[in-house]
Length: 242
Image 1 (cartoon, one colour):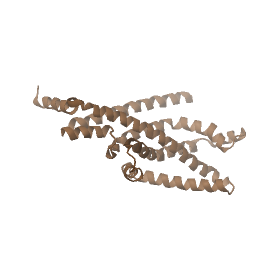
Image 2 (cartoon, helix red, strand yellow; image 1 turned 90 degrees about the vertical axis):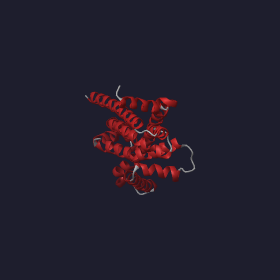
Image 3 (cartoon, rainbow, N blue to C red; image 1 turned 135 degrees about the vertical axis):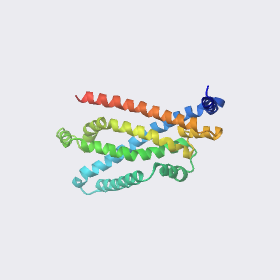
């Protein structure tokens, strides 16, 4: 057997087999998926709220009578615009550092900090996805809702939003994939995600080849798997439209 193959096998054994170091990667995968899943839930919740405020302001503000509701909608729209501008205009790395070391400096729950940071980041992009989906719905749908006696809120809840979510599900699924890859920076605040798991192994063994190559392969497999699921989802949605 060539010497370089023997060396690779020895390095593999040192990196993963000795002291069960492969468990760092298993724990990292679990934490990465948990972080991504809950961050996306938070992001969707924020996105729905922000999108609802922005769309309501765009469609209803000029028709509303002066009063508290109109004032609150104006304030909400301003806050939403600032939120979207700041979050989409600054790196996710900076955001997670600010949340961990400043806003939630007293918290010892690193996973919670990561979920909040990535959820807030994802919410800005989800909001624009949802807003774009709502704006793409034909205005005749809203008129149909009004003809049935629905008010604006009922029309949005029962007619517009169901159609919107059907149309944007593939985009939301792709946001999940993007978020999955972005969580690779969570290790900078101590979350034992997949990337940090590899860095722990590197710190112990002083080897980079196997740990880094392995996490690249794991990320690739996860992204390919979720991309495959998104493809299935898109095909089913197309069939349902026929």
